[in-house]
Image (cartoon, rainbow, N blue to C red; front, side):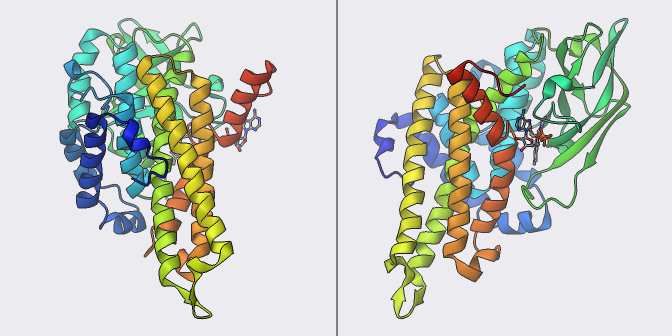
Length: 385
Ligand SMILES: Cc1cc2nc3c(=O)[nH]c(=O)nc-3n(C[C@H](O)[C@H](O)[C@H](O)COP(=O)(O)OP(=O)(O)OC[C@H]3O[C@@H](n4cnc5c(N)ncnc54)[C@H](O)[C@@H]3O)c2cc1C
C-alpha cells in the first residue's frame, strides 16, 4: 500500500495479512477485466461467491454467523483494496456487509440471523438496502413507503430509488413507516409477488455496479420478516455509519490507484526533452495527492482503532467520509490533468475512478450533508433541517 508515514507498522500482523490477501485476490481476479466490465456496464456477479470464500463479506461481523470476525482496521483495509480496483466492488461489499448483514445482526431475531447471515457471508445470497426514495435521499425521514399490518402479515407499498445490487438481490432490507408512523426495517425476499426491480441505465459513474429502482405494490410478507429491534430512523442511520466507515478507507484505495497512474505516466512522458515529472507544476499535484492520501490514511486508521475500542462517534465517521472522498475525487481530477489527452480514455484507470468518485461523494450522505452534520456537532446549531 502507498504508505508514506509507515502506518503499516502500526497494524497487527493479522491485519497486514488480510490486506495482502485482499490485494492479491483483486489483482488476480479483477484488475485485468475491470475496464471491460465498467465499459459494458456489468457487475461481475461470478466473483461474489469467491469474495465470500475469501471472507470479505461482512468481514468484521462475528464468526458464529459465518463471517470472518476480523478487526475493524482489517475490514477497512479490505475496503481499501476493493476500491483500489473499482468503487463498484467496494460498493457491493459495503451494501452486503454494512447495509444488509449489519442490520440483520444488530436488529434481527436470532432466527433471522441464523437464516440469513451465513448465506450472505458466503456470497450464496445477495442483499440490497432500500432507504432512498425519489423525493430526496438526504431527508430519509420524509419516506413515503408504508408497511401496513394485516393479521400476521405486513403489506408494503412504495418506491425506492438508486438501490445498489437491486436487480441481483435475493433479499432487500426495506425501510418503511408502519401504521404508527414509526420507521421499521423488513427483510423482503425479492421474489415476493408485487416486488419489482428496475435497472437504472445510462449511468456515467459506478458502471461496474448494479443500481436499481425498487417498486413495491402490495407486497405481502410474514410479520416475522420485520427486524424486531428497528424502531425509528436511528436504525437505518446506524447502518449508514457502518458503510461510511468502509468508504473512508475505500476512497483512499482509489486515491492510490490514480496517484500511481499519474506518477508513472509523468515519469515516462517527456515534453521539451524532459519528463513532465521534473516540472514543478506536476510535482505540486503529485505532492498534494500523496499528502492527502497520508492524512486520509491516518484519519482512517485512527477511526478504525476507535471503532475497535467501541468508542467511535458517528460524527467522526462523517468527517472521515467527507474528507477522504473529496480528496480522492480531487486527486483523480489532478491525475486526469497530468495524463493529458491520455487521461480521457479507459486505458488508464484514472477517469473511471474519477467518475465513480462522483457517486461516492454523493451517496451515503453528500459532502454538504456531512458538512452540516459536523457543523451542527461543533456549533450546536442545526443548519441541516
Ligand atoms: C450509484 C448510487 C448508488 C446508491 N445506492 C444506494 C443504496 O444502495 N441504497 C439507498 O438507500 N440509497 C442509495 N443511493 C442514494 C444516495 O444515498 C442518495 O443519492 C444521496 O443520499 C443523495 O440523495 P439525492 O440523490 O436524493 O439528493 P438530494 O437529497 O436531493 O440532494 C441534492 C443536493 O441538495 C443538497 N442538499 C440536500 N439537503 C440539503 C440541506 N438541508 N442543506 C443544503 N444542501 C442540501 C445535497 O447536498 C445535494 O447536493 C445511491 C446513489 C447512487 C448515485
